[in-house]
Image (cartoon, rainbow, N blue to C red; front, side, top):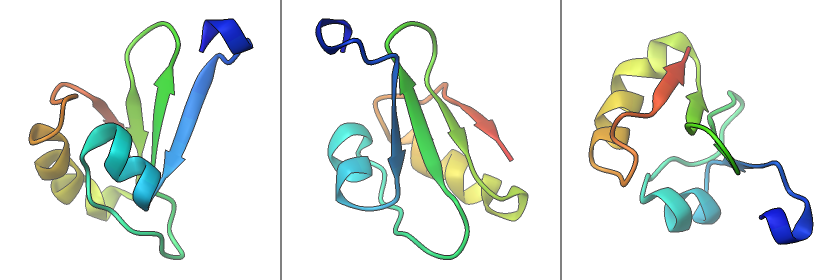
Length: 70
């Protein structure tokens, strides 16, 4: 990422999210996104009523301690 001056990657639901995080979440009218910064901790943004499901998904991913902003 630093080679290409990229500060962070935002991954919405779909194939890229699955590839980089092993989280299965598909696009809908509500935003569910993972932000993977070049430095610092990754975090997730999702609707508050989806936070329980998001915690379940992230606990099975390579980022189990990811912060979830609902």
